[in-house]
Length: 268
Image (cartoon, rainbow, N blue to C red; front, top):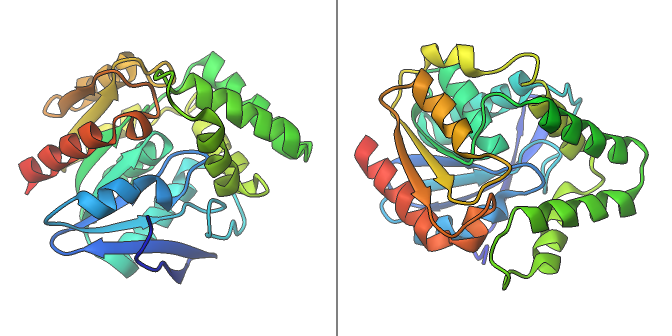
């Protein structure tokens, strides 16, 4: 895993770590909250016919945090800078938080996002989700690393449905990805902001093809979230991954890769 070395580039106010693999049309992979570019290792090793770029969001993995604004606009503009200065215009694949970032970029800079594949993605959150993010942010603010680790373990377990999943090992990778928690809290604030300012009204500006991928047992981002996106984007396609929870790329990586491949080939 991660046999190809990573690179670092300064974009805006942060040093961004990323990994490039393969050849062909550019595909940028945007990970979810409490993850890093390694969450895409299966796709970077097996996605044929595309040149993939997987980068660490600000404050995650090896990317510095800079001055976090706690807004989706900031994470969107980080992606825009990566597309302009590293990959060029590209298909963008985003998981959860990453999918929301991809959609925001597709709406704001349609010349840069040539296609969007959204995995377990929401454009609006309810009160319970906003309270969830606020509680997690509080653990970071309190500088209680053990409490944050405990929360990440609980969240990881809730995002998996296969009893054979190694929750402890998966959680440890996520703990490493969030580091001191600053980037995690920054991104959580961005997602919580979808309560008062949903992204949904901006979807009318999306011009590229869109494919939505959901999971059969996703309680963090249920089918309703995909339906909201598809109502705003009637031409978007939908695929569901069976026997998986929110962390579908952990439980069913081959099925997720196949769905991404089908979506990208349909956009090419």
